Length: 571
Ligand code: ATP
Ligand code: MG
Image (cartoon, rainbow, N blue to C red; front, top):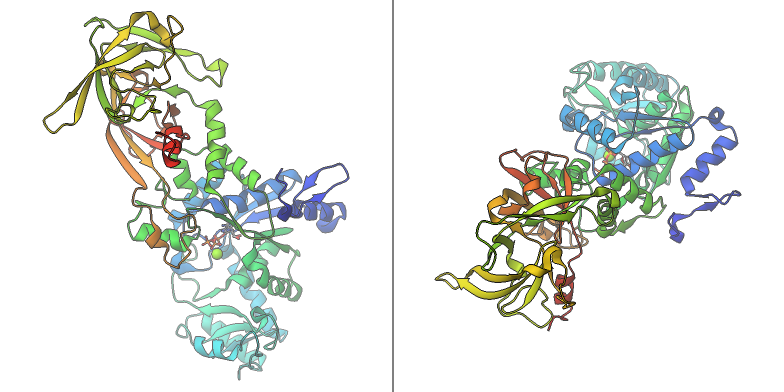
């Protein structure tokens, strides 16, 4: 449990530490509100893919339903036909399933309720609580007043009931142009909350809808459709983010003034924001539309599908959301916490393998030409049950280019001329000779090995500091490796206004020439492992082929050398 004071936890008698939402739900249940029922929902607008912020909203509502023996609905808030698409509906369902949020057979659409919403609008007109207005959009804004000045009543505010009913019917049947009329609730043009100044209920939109086709020429606005959909479904606790706090009086007004079968209650919680990330569908869509990323599921996107393709597990995302907790004040969570949640899991579950990303050839001059030894390697030192595997060792090996420096500082414990290092699970080797091409680039190292150091054990107590991974040249499997990094180079990319100016130009590096240990041949998407000393990797679900594997770097390990170099402690 998080003990951040801003989490507003409430201590329970049993010593249970509940966040403020769970404490509220519990007290409602204890008091017998809604007959003790708990029913929550997740109401996405199908106008984009879900991001990690949505995961917080989903898991909060879903787990509360679970914890209190209640139900959880998935409801598409599809009241905005211009921007919606079935592609989004499908991706949203896939993401919820993957996160483990089960809506059973309760998949609903706000558009399922268009008939009821229309009837209730007529009821409001009959009861003098709504009217058809002929003011245009700009005039409505002008008449609304400001935070400091009250608004002015529309000349149509007292339009006779029959006239409003007839006009609404005409709006619905497509008799008028877009913008000619709106339906508005008759509340209070001087209300201190601007949302209560005769808000719009319907507007004319002559756009086909992905579910209702061209049945409707009017569409309900969010504030009208949302709460009423909650009420129709018998939702008890309607949880949403803080920006909807100002909408709550209107949410309540509709519930009080309509013949709804249930009376849901809205509660707001803080949005999830992450450093080095933008978290709004509009901005994510811009990244896709401008070609900054390949699509919504690009592994650099903070979308659930992007994180999944990058190699995140749903368990790590659930753990992350749990750790963040539920607060009532917006804040930005460090991206490192998300990475930590994953590393923590993969450290336990992912087997270690040897992969050379940027190969440099080593020839062991005193190793017999045709000899191949199978050496035993530990799969996962964190998991005794993971066992060992045999990896072939031969005279010619690949090591990382970065693991050799001709002119190396004192604390560089990897390979340098005349120095000895350990090859993991194999032997001690010493670098005797450096071979360069015409341009002066190092192309091969000639080394000698100590046959007495088999298994990487010191034969006489002499110490070597560096341990390198390696792959036998004739046995290596070729692969492409994609090194993903943060999409933005600034922790708060939106600061300064233009988030596109803060893109990280090095968010993707593609290595075409990686060498894998032979046991990795034939692995399939879904396979995760640790490339020893490099990070956690997975096989890409879209582009990998058996004959040409593609691996994604999910998350790095902490690189102690990069850290030292950054602190200037390498001399
Ligand atoms: P965005 O602002 O990213 O475009 P949205 O609010 O328009 O998102 P919806 O599909 O309307 O997206 O959101 C569905 C639910 O997800 C809403 O209840 C909303 O409060 C919640 N939600 C959206 N973003 C976040 C976030 N960053 N953290 C937590 N919950 C969120
Ligand atoms: Mg929204």
